[in-house]
Length: 232
Image (cartoon, rainbow, N blue to C red; front, side, top):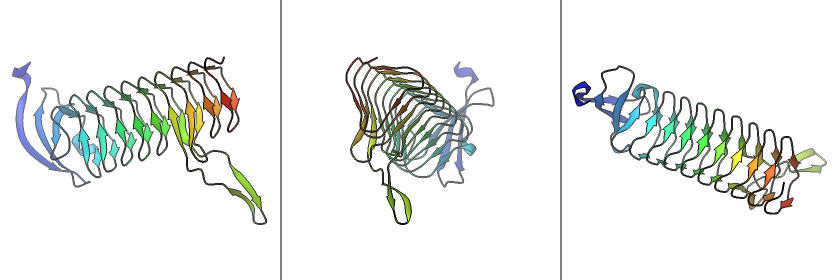
């Protein structure tokens, strides 16, 4: 109702140094419609501009909602209609596709790509370089892109092999609570489009899971194994 909107022209200087211009405030005190000068597009909504930390450039689409305590590193891109819950952290160079929803305490590392219309539930962690397709659902506590379990023995003891690959999750994938998908030692760990994975499944480094595959709870797939399409 336009009669309930009061226009303002107030500029805030956040602790991060970002200039925030309050465009309008609803009659209720809990929601602000704001524009971060030179960064956010029009009609982005921040629950509280003083409690969002923008540490670099932030490109934002329309109809975006950002809750309190969210931290944005530099060069982040947020698509139209994205919803970001409280206390999320979004790393440098990360892209979040349109319509995607991040629940509270989601962490996206640097250079992560999340596709359109995804659902990331509370305490999901996606490590650097991971690629998530469209319409992916990650249940609470999923960890995608953690280091693979690779070690060498030496006279000095057990030493880790650097894990420098990434994880690629296809479209329409659903991962249950506590699923872990390790990054590749080199190259990619892949979960094919349409696959459905139950709670507490472990997928090791460099594994390739085919399309439309079903993995039931507590399955463990050792590093470099290959599963074809429609495996159950």
